[in-house]
Length: 444
Image (cartoon, rainbow, N blue to C red):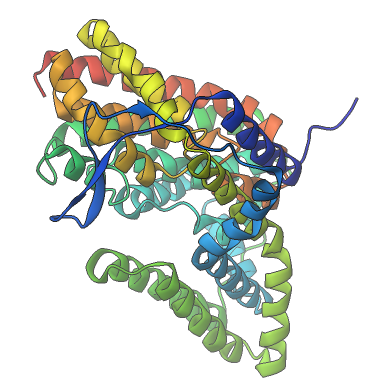
């Protein structure tokens, strides 16, 4: 039986497919004006019109590849530098010592470990839209998961999956709900209580499904899952303490000082240098470990760059607005509840061609806000439909560079991951649909 295409083949295939779409879908655009309050271009409602524009040529298609790498240069640098940092930390032996000590403490309490790790990533997703940063942490998570007796699917589900869940249901994710509420004229943190309740319900169901799968697919038997008792040595404890402090600084930097990828990269580069010296790797040993980290993260960086090329082609081909117009215009003729659910489904479908959910908020909210007024559903429900549909779909779309990079490092083919994750996503979207209908009935 032929193997399913790997991540690189899939990304190139989608780049070519995006170029073909520019010859099939009519070119069109909405008028846009500058919003002085946000200094962003916003869409003028009911301004869509078809236009005459050239389709993307074969040469432009291949030119989009280096342009995609340039567009995501800051994220690629983050992946390489944080990846290199974790390789330096791993070479000191601190990570192995820490994970072995943790698994010894949690022996017989593996399910609690899954919940604790998932909660940490849920919080990261909810607070800062944590996603691409997980790429560099994946090797560590795989080792932790294997020591607990679980496979790589569980490792990705409790980390990347939980982060996406948190980002999707968050009341404060700056790249999703904050942008969407700003675009629709809603107050910051409005509807937070409802969002938190739905997030708690979704997380409980998510963990039930993940734990059930994990226990059914144990990597080792209980008899083999025995660890020798030992204490964490002082050097490893210091190194792990510094790593923990680095993450605290990272969260403070993101929330209070508006840190971007460059600040994160610089922080972890400094961390690697300090850890390498404390771990007695020396200057040369630290640099060699960093180089090995770069090598391991190159493929993941390529996937992220290629995913950006897809958006470039669709923008150059002038068909993104046409897709939005075709997906959302028919909703005005549906009942309220069906309109809200259809809005969520359409946001999920649109996310395949607009893999940036922050960009998707800017593209769709100015169009959907007045459409929601016309249908008779609140703008808050409109934002919820966007959050649930667009962000949650990040778990199954092959155009998401972060997902494909994590899967590449975890050694999971996309077809196997899709089969595993689709059931989870559909259940969560079902909960989301119930939440939308409930929000309408409550007059949210």
